[in-house]
Amino acid sequence: MTREPHPTREPLRRPLIGITSYQDEAAWSVWRQRASLLPQTYVDAVVRAGGTPVLLPPQPGGAEHLAEALDGLVLAGGPDVDPARYGAAADPRTGPPHPARDDWESRLLHAALARDLPLLGVCRGMQVLNVALGGTLLQHLPERSHQIVPAGFVRHPVAVEGGSRLAGVLGTVTDVSCYHHQAVDRVGRGLQVTARSADGTVEALELPGHRFVLGVQWHPETDPDDDRLFHAFLTASQPRETTR
Image (cartoon, rainbow, N blue to C red):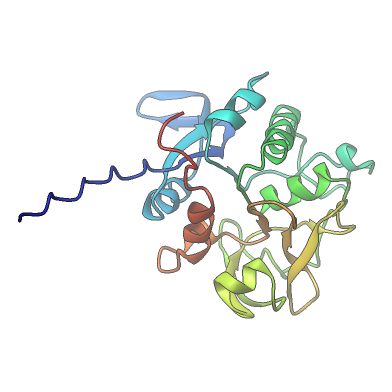
């Protein structure tokens, strides 16, 4: 008696991961135009972790539709959040506002939370998460602490709260690459601080009760030798069904 071969199971498709992007003047070839752009490191990190990246530049609508179509959302780093969004006057050292991006990312974030879409906030992305949930920001950290030279990342250790989702991925101490002059001050509704640097700066936030909502103040996408955080995010973003 011969056995029938087991049917081949179709592999799940790669998760579709939206990544928010800049809108700025850019130059390429003979052109200099306003463009939607993103550092390639974000794209590479998502691909290495098993996802298909899609860039999400600021636009006037469609956040709810995208939250339905995507499997996960990355709020990327970028310029300072407008202090008016958390009821503060701008410090002279705060960068100029980018209202279109602030508004777009806030709408995307709320749409993602409403659908329990896995979300990873990176640097500015964590600050957007905190502000969207009613938190505030420190507009300028001490000089030469977390941003030492222009366009150069600072490497330092952070302590991670034991028992947190982040600790389950990275352990209770990890080295990170950061570049920021602002940080979380008052923590937003429902968020938990799950990592700090030696000077007390908030380095990570989590939102319990969701599949995966995690913000980090550092730039994990710049470290190709350590994809643990992106792998954890992509694991949470695996499609729940093979077709939409």
